[in-house]
Image: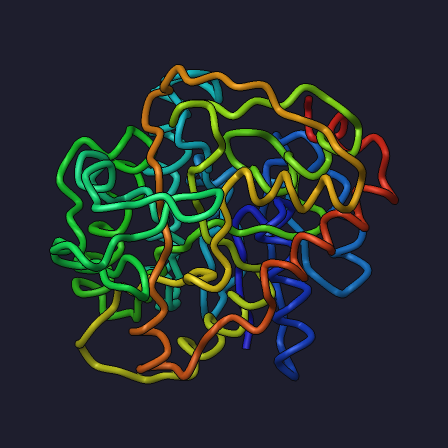
Amino acid sequence: MKILITGICGFVGSTLARSLLARAEGLQILGIDNLMRPGAETNRQALKSLGVEFVHGDIRSASDLAGLPAADWVIDAAANPSVLAGVAGGGSSRQLFEHNLAGLGNVLEYAKTHRAGLLLLSSSRVYSIPALVGLPLRVEGDGFVLDDTRPLPAGVAAEGIGTGFSTTAPISLYGATKLASEVMALEYGAAFNFPVWITRCGVLAGAGQFGTPDQGIFAYWVNAHLRRRPLRYIGFEGLGRQVRDAFHPSDLATLLLAQIRTPRDGGQRIYTAGGGPRSAWSLARLNAWCDARFGVHTPAADPRPRPYDIPWVVMSNSEVQRDFGWSPALSLDSVVEEIATHAEQHPLWLELSGL
C-alpha cells in the first residue's frame, strides 16, 4: 500500500509518516511539501532516511500534483493551521483560501484520477464561535469546565464536543476553509466513488512541533517558558482559564490506519478526535506544569479579547471509540514532557520556528 501525505515536512505530516511506517508492514510513503514553513526543511532528510519518497512541490499547483505517481490513499496534512490566518498575521485572506481550499481541490482531482481514498484532517474550529462562547461553563480550579448541571446544546456532552455541534457562522475564515473542505471532499468521494474519512482534530502537540502562539500553543508555551520569554494570558480576565484538549499525532496515526482498514459503503464519514476530558488543560495549568519543571515564570495578564478566542474546547472520542475502538494512548502529561525534553535539547527551537 502506498500513501501520499501532503505537507509531509510539517510537524503533523512528518510525525504521521514516521508513526505509520512503524505500525504497518509493507507500507510505502510518498510526500509533497513546499517547505515554506520555517523549520520544515529540518524534517526532509530524516524522512528520506526512512525511505520516504519526497517531492518538493506545492499542492496549489495542479501540475505539481499531476506529476506524482499513484497512491492508494492520501492524507491531507497541508494547510495554514492558524485560526488567525487572513485576519491577524499568518498571510492574507487570499493566501488562506489558496492554501486550504484551492489546494484541496487539486488534491481531490488527484484522488479522483487515481481512485485513491482520502483522509482529510479537519479541525475543532469548524464549530460556531457564538455557540462555543455560549456553552455553560463554570470555574473549577485554574480553568473552565463544562457545567453539565445546566442544559447542554446539541452535540456536546460530558465527553466533549461531537459532530452534531453547531457549525453556523461565524466560525473564522480558517474554520470556514476547513468546513468547506469537508463538504467538497464528501461530494468528490460520492461523485467519483472513492472513500473519504474526515477527522475533526483537537489540538495536536508533541516534540518537534514548530511552536507559535496561534498554532502550536503547547510547544510554544513550553519553549518560551524555558527560555524566559515574555508570556501573556490573553482574554478571559487575563487568568489563563481557557481550556484545550490535546493529543499526539502518533495516536492520530493509529486512528487513520483503522479508518483505512474499515471498508464501508455509506454511513458516517465525519468524526471528532482529541485528547478528551482527561487530556484537557487550562493555560494556567500548563504554566504551573512548566513552573514545576523549569522554575517559576509568571505570565503577564492581558484581559483584552482577541478575534475568534473561545474559552473551552474539548473533543469527544465517543464515536471513534464506538466505530474504530480508538482512544489516545498517550496522556497529555507525557506529551508535554516530550516537548520539554525536546526544548532542553534544542535551545534555538523558537528561532527555528520563525520567532
